[in-house]
Length: 342
Image (cartoon, rainbow, N blue to C red; front, side):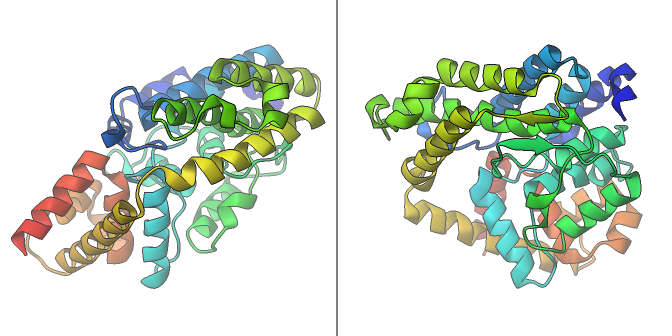
């Protein structure tokens, strides 16, 4: 498996950045677009992940282009409004008896099925695997690869992610580059989210936990560099990607602070409820439209993927695929049109 460093993934990077899903990366990262200009959006986040993963991979002698391909594709399946949208789609899937939803598995679904009229993108198993296993919300001190994973097991994991709640949090990538991207996802978002929260007046720099500041610093640049340098130092000539004890403890405390003081307060509760209502309304409308023969936006979208996709995919999953593919703006436009016509 370590012969993978000899392979070039440049063409796969081209496939990814020229995809329709990549063009719709203008979605919420942590804060909504209404928060103002200069706030990190999903497209910028994936570039930070790519930049971070390339730095770490270069220092460790890993395949930089593989890490970059995984990083650029890792959030292609993220729905509108970030993890709030992911939560709503997961609840919808469970309530409708159509499995569950996880953005990392949806990103793999985009790569393997939903792009290029149902053919999927021309990307290799290590890229799909790294995307599937990137889950940056599951923090770990040590990221170990699954050296025994095969292509058939990877496809079984993709399937299970849509059938078994929480399954996507417990899988490991087949490559060290996949491990690097998983760590890079956290590194890329934590400092940026803190800077955005300070800019928006949600927190002050003095609010940051001192146990973390003493080790990592109190701004994005210092936090990022401390985490990257530690990972490189601790992972060199080892079979896993890992943090030192002191750095990991500081990162854990900082992430706990972010969940309590930032992520739970990115938007007012009234707006959360309104968005959740829109997801349910649009899902029901899509399901009804797919049951009819008349043309509709969701049917046009599904037909663009292909007759086989429509024939073999339950209408509930088609509706979820469609909603997940939308940008924030596209979602709001569809919701407004539907509500004005009723």
